[in-house]
Length: 314
Image (tube, rainbow, N blue to C red; front, side):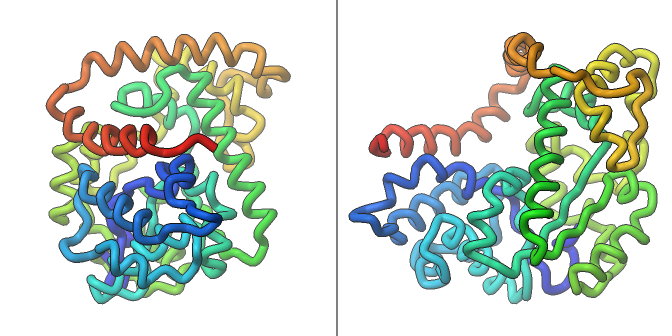
């Protein structure tokens, strides 16, 4: 949606900051970062991404020249700076959700970064992942992941009071899109435009919607039809297990538990069993996916596996 605004670049997620964390020894020689080799492999990962970046938006040489911080985060930021310059935009949006866990690296490389924290009812999140090609399938694991993410987000917000932080609820976004996006744009210093709601008509959205079930709604206008899916009687047991993990934190964001008064006092005790069952459910789900579609998504994984094989152990 923000990528529909004039002046904003929002290329597809490639997860570079996450994927290259354990590969850094490959690019560190005599205590110094080999910017050129890192940039070459980083551009190769972008090339293999199932969703394409704009043509001419990056190259190893441009990334090296654009790096303002000698670090992995600095290289990632340089990629986005190059894309923004190519598109003649002013700012960019990085949509990789795992940035939450590499935030300190990002802040060191770009102290003026701004954060958009989107939170959604954990029960609807868990139900959504249950059918998605990725993510947890067991309600307890989905609940643990949601809780861990929110705890991490709050710790970062408190630990970096100098960083501009915008929190919006998914439910408010789809129910009151104009008010929510006008407010967000104002907080970010962006000029609001009605074109923001035409995201589903963009060529990028149409292409993405055909590549994975998880992106199918990108080709549709905003809808609140999925809000409150957890209230159906048919999913009561599933939802109850999510609440047993998340109930105490849910209320912080305005979500009220339906079936439990408070979260379990020691939920970690059942974590191992839930993780084992989650792996079983994920394997069952994987066998139902279209192998041709998965082959497209697997190209980047093969490349990363090869890089890992060639990376010295530290």
